[in-house]
Image (tube, rainbow, N blue to C red):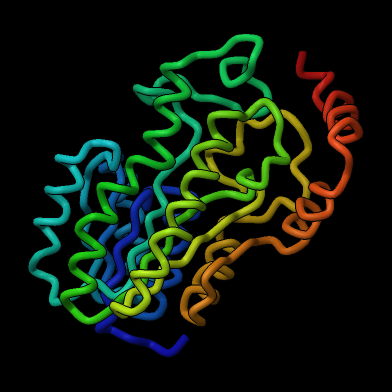
Length: 271
């Protein structure tokens, strides 16, 4: 990517993982960054790395995207920017309602039919779906007014439904997929590109607690580089890595009874 010091990029969930890696990709391009997440200290560290890497600006916006008032405050802070060219709605995960209940989506019982928690299921949905709505509202309006822009939303290949013991997490990502697909038709004539990013297994804080072998695991830096290439090329749906995407597609063709048998073998040590 050629340097562009007048490219204004917003990234949510920017304090670690894919979000931090996305920020560093655009920093090396010299872009102007707005970094939004809950953890002030970690955001400060990411901002410092971005400035050292060549970013023209690295604003720290502290907030929780599941709180409309936090998003509204961040939107107000960005009013001084002439435009927002790229918005990566990347915040999300598998945490419970208050962030204290971390859910290992394939090992913990509180997302399963054997020990279900409505509070955690609701928290996962707010984290991975509802929180994005609070950003989409002002971003779609602003980009329409400025004549265009790109919004990239991070979903997951879990939406393919191939991952057991993760009903609420899968549901949240499937809802996000449907939302982006549904909004794209009217957004495009207004100059707004909507991009759905669906990672496979990426080495982040979220995957640290997963207790089974994750096929085709990739680093956050590898994932971010692939996502930025796709977004800048105008690809509407980006799935990375392609190997896991293909495996998921093929798995969907296998009879459910055989898939269930295979997963029971894989997850047996976790019980």
